Length: 83
Image (cartoon, rainbow, N blue to C red; front, side, top):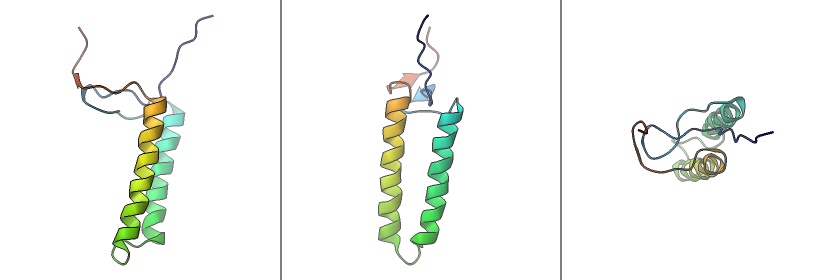
């Protein structure tokens, strides 16, 4: 029996980072991120508390990048298709 690792977030074809999710777990993480950003806009209204909202979004972004780092393809600079 072979063990095949399935990445939640594939590497982008061009540039550095990850693309859109390829499985339901990745979509769940991305959907949760968007939902929490929206909830944060209600909890910390950006026009009234911009610093609090910026800190909140920054913290969520760090968590998202950490999840992508652990569950996505290893990041590296890419220039297109492999030959």
